[in-house]
Length: 316
Image 1 (cartoon, one colour):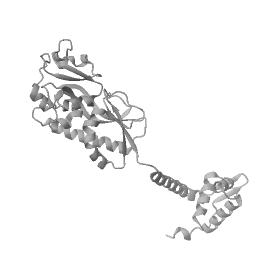
Image 2 (cartoon, one colour):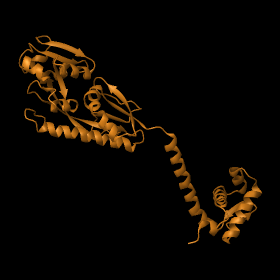
Image 3 (tube, one colour):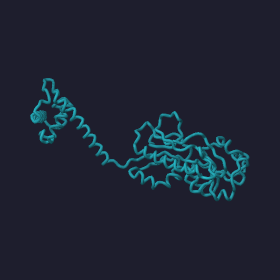
Image 4 (cartoon, helix red, strand yellow):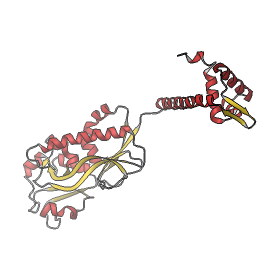
């Protein structure tokens, strides 16, 4: 196969031919290349002479591709488009900064689960900068700028790409020191001798049935401290200050390390499931998928380990 430089006078002549075939006009091609129309005409004539065929029919109303010209343009047009797209992609990679992925998650999950793994995350995704959109209380709507979030969404909600994350399993937890000093919680009693760490967003009536008598503030003899940020509640529980409701997707690591222990044998299964979700309203970046799978694998490993621990009844 002969080399291209031996077949045509110049690569520029091919680009001029492609532009003339695309625009259907020597005048428009001249404007594109910032030269005169006669210069374009000469370049095309030189290319035709080198190849040995006519590429255009010159007519009063303009130019038209010949059969040979159309065959050449079919190949050349696609090649020029792909070359231009590749160059633009290279330029974008060179000029762009690292991508920023916005994660919308509970402040407690980030503080107590993700931050201890931040070096692992950085090693897995060195090319990514993370912006955290932290939610201190109940997880509700998702802001427009979020790329990936943890939420409970309806099974028939088609608004999101979704990855299964963790079942909503909740039970009272405290530090080992607190349990040793005050003993386990009796849900049939009045809570005397115990301190309860409560989230403002969790209305008491919602959990009254599960908690039993101790939740009735009018008759409770326990001490109740209310917070608007669940991460602070967990930190207080870790410090031995009281009993908190523990969402297994957040406290799994602390249970495995023995930093928190069940305060009673109560286990609340809501039947709902936390998911990792990415809005379909914006393009799904491959790195967002990778981060979702990384988070999914991490929590799955911990839940498997918890299911095998003595004294914990969190199996599905």
